[in-house]
Length: 181
Image (tube, rainbow, N blue to C red; front, side, top):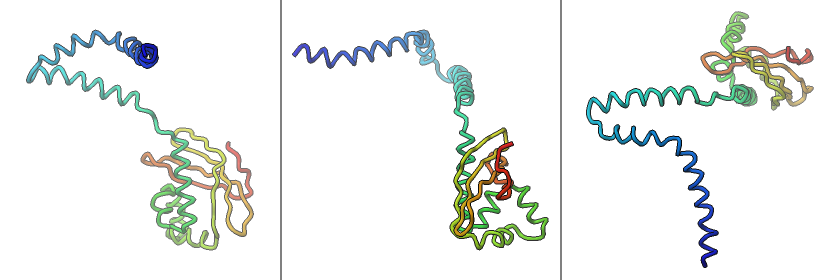
C-alpha cells in the first residue's frame, strides 16, 4: 500500500517543486501585498493606480497581433461567398475598396449595377487561395478562380486595409501573368 501512495504522490510533489521554482523569485511581492492590504481610502487608491497602469501597459505591449494573412484569407472567403451568392450590395458596401467603388462610379454606373452586369452570367464561381503576401496596409493574393463553363484562371487579387479592415482593390486580368511583384 505504501508503494501505491508514493507512486500517486510523486507527480504532486514534482508539480509542487516546479511551482516553488517559479514562484520563489516573486517572494518580494509578499511583503508588498501585506502592506497594500493594510491601506485604506485614498492611500489605497494612490497605491493601486500605478499597479493598474503597469498592468494595462503590459496587456497592450504583450497582446498578440492579429494574423494579417488570416484576415486577408477571411476577406477573400467573404468576397467569394458574396460573389457566389450574387450579393452585390455586400460586395460594394463591405468588400470592395473605396477607390475601386469610386472608379466604377466614375465610369457612369452604380457599383451594384456594374457588378450585376459583369457577374450575373457566372455560374457557381469559386476562389481558391494559393498564396498571400502582406506588406503593411497592402496585400496580394494569388487565387485560382473557377466558374461553370469557363476556363480556370489564376489571378492576383490586391487588397488594401481601410479603417483596419481588408478590402479588394483590384484583380489582375485572367491570362495575365499572375505573379507577385
